[in-house]
Image 1 (cartoon, chains in turn green, red):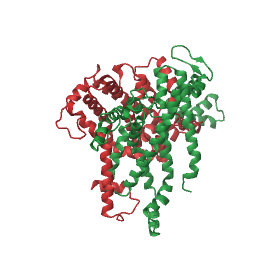
Image 2: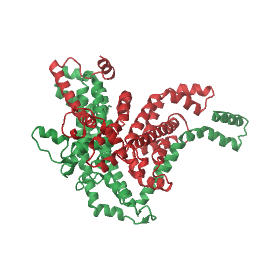
Image 3: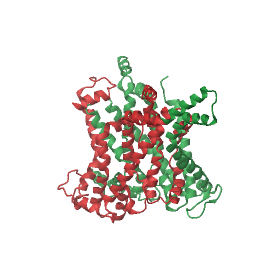
Image 4: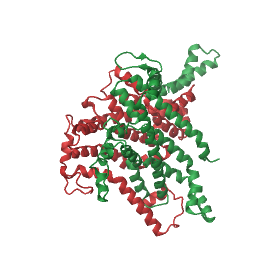
Length: 318
Length: 295
């Protein structure tokens, strides 16, 4: 309200042909000030919590810093050690890539399969949709990770179920060959949100395309392959990128299931878990900053790569 | 009946009905029901385990307890030095403050981006979108050093103050998209009547934007309630623990002794999220479907 009055004053001054200097500032303020007032909290946050810390983190990544003494410049030593002399880094990269490669395709495949089933006009769609989405909503909590740890314990529920079919299951959690699979299954169990996005995408495909195709005698499978899949590629692409970035950042389940260790034998040492251990367990803040920047680099490279290759398989409407 | 009407409104089937015989329909439903049971089984089993007598918990894979016994809830609630009531209260305080912070700060910024003209608007908007892509790991350590030096560790401030500075840029983006859909004529008419930007924001934009504000509020609440990483880093004093840290402590301290108590507290910790899910299901699902937000 005040702003409007100010600008009215300035217009008056301008009409007299003597815009006072004070009036010009008032005019600029009236025009732009309100915008910056509304933006102020975000601007403070951006400089204080994002830009400032990002610059500081880049600086710290070239130092040795334990929180107590001042950071000590070590040049590229952190990065050199990461690249050449850190077996835990190698293990973390291995586990994280394995997790991404195993969990994302399974998750997307389930999401798409269920979305297609639900899109066929089944009765009770809203109920099914809710049931399949619920695990996604609860999945990030410690309670579910705790439950999972118990389900896959040596004497846990999964092995009891397998036992009823005469199969003796291994102790999933404590065996390095199987532990990663418990986390993959947990991730796949939460296929609900990509499923909902697939459902929304399927709804956009015009019905008459299928009618025309079936008049031409195209089989269901052919229709799926020739119509549904190509028209859905933008949604598949979106889901794949979002889920992959998320998988790179996974933390809580691995932390809870391994008791914070990333064990057995580093088999669940997710990258973020290793970063946490270095920063808040060993207080190697400089080294952990370098790890953080490498993670950013990996995610950025992956995203760039996805967008570059997407032009060969993602079809947008022309 | 309601289901049938609702689904015909929300999801026009893209494959013509009637082309599938009764057998196909039975198969589809059979598959979906089986999948639903598999999805819910772990959750139901946990709830059932929480009301079983202690010696029966791992004895059966069935979901039906032979007798119902709430002793686990009492043992779990008082199982640590600090009761779970304290953890629930802490989680509630942090979550509610986060919701307020996110809704207020993000809507202010979104209003500026969507409606106000000022020098540099497009520049800042591009920067804001850019921050969406920065993983929190980059800012994590300097932020920790900052909050440590401010003496904020072991308080809720590091978890809450950033929200009042619109640190969840995703919600800004969501609100900008919504605000842009509100007819500009309303602002212009209000301006003619002498309203300034504050009044327009307060009297026109916010009341008309309740759906997007509610979506942001609900997701904020659920994500904060479930957050483990933030509290893990900033809260070391058990009196300040949130429910997620409380649960984790319970796992560590009771190791294998009191599974009933652990499942009881786990079940309780999911109640608020489940409650929100039950009441705001449509809003949540539409939010996911139109914006792709997820956690």
